[in-house]
Length: 193
Length: 207
Length: 174
Image (tube, rainbow over all chains, first blue to last red; front, side, top):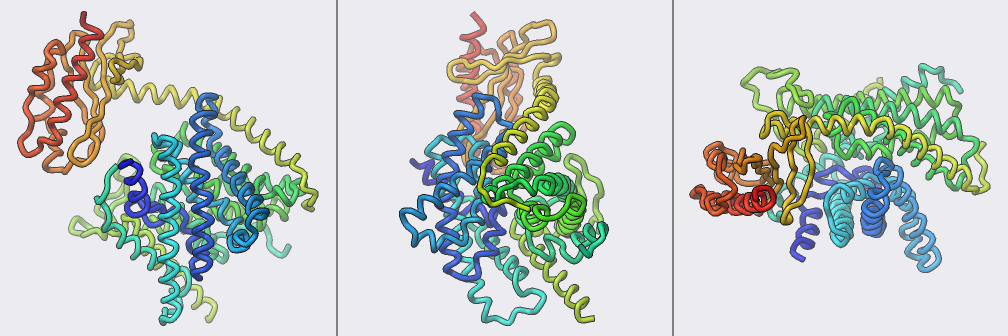
């Protein structure tokens, strides 16, 4: 149990997927201009990543390794992620079209995403248990969401600032993310697995 | 159809540089730029994947149904990435280990996928190859710039994977800007680099 | 131009072709990579046992050992991979015991201990005391000197080393 809690805190604060590992920077940059976009993207990521990690774990450990087709890992994981995306999309369209509306624009962006694939690959690499893999995906997505929401708030403030012309847009956002990342390094050493 | 083949390639390096102007594919750029050699290796790998995937997708562009096109792109790219991974494992295992998880992450690289969708899926093979080449070189140039800044200013020396190539570039009294080697330094360095490029291109437009 | 009929045939064809290509490439690259990894591993084992030519992984009393053989198939000894909880995080080490039942040496693979305090586990002054200890007396191993001020780093290694040699003796020295 302690292990699981550690995983959550580590991957949100200390080893944040975006701020320390650079996964998911592209969607972060593209979706942080409005808080609504940020919320939508966060929900989408949490949903997909929490599903993707245990499924990847299962297929990697119980199908691919025994069959010796580990070298197809990248292709298979990409297929898994696409399938999850399709499946969720279909499910939501039927059962909760409002949610799909809110998430709708981000769906094509969620699928080919560094963060989701990175999470799946890391889960295959580390020796997590099945439960740990679910928590890992969830925590990584939470970390992404946290970073996304904070950056979105920062960008909101930046809109009313006088940013020098060359810095406007991506440049100043990157610098802001950098400072945020710096702030997060203060969490290092708080938890250990 | 106004661009010659050479122009097709050259636009990827300068005017439409995927990283510095189109702002794509930042994840691996940030992740791999701590060391110049890693940046070069990654750039070459991405260029190879770009050319190959653009080639194949352009070849089959008439046969892919609209509904499944994203899936086809992703699978083709993932296949080439896996192939590059295997080749690297045989010939450059140390570099492969240094690149870590960013090598397989090429399979969802924004640059590769965007070029497939926007260009290769409706352009002839020749142009697609040139586009891949140009975008790849542009990507590599941007990556080398960032890696150069980070490693040279951040450590004062250039290292290969297991050996030091050039040492004490600024003399032994140089106090390296260590923060550049940290994750947050990467963000800041890239932000500054982009601002520089923006300023430069503005001057070009105004001139 | 792209057809919109939504047929998955092309997708399936693409998947099959890709799988075939990758399988072929794997058949080419896998033996080369395995050979190289074997060589690297043997080089690491040579640090403990000169002339190591082959190894086999076994599990004794829940501890993972690698039996090391020379090119004539002679049993040179075994190397145990073990991990214990140190002060900050887990410490991963390998303990090599010769065919005659004496500790050849210890190697710390990974640790997160404080450099000047717990980091002493990487120093010769700590590691050398293991060398030559007979596996028949695990209590002597467990009695080795803990480093004052770094007890939480050094003691777990010493205590667990005793378990390792005990398992080795039980298996190989009757």
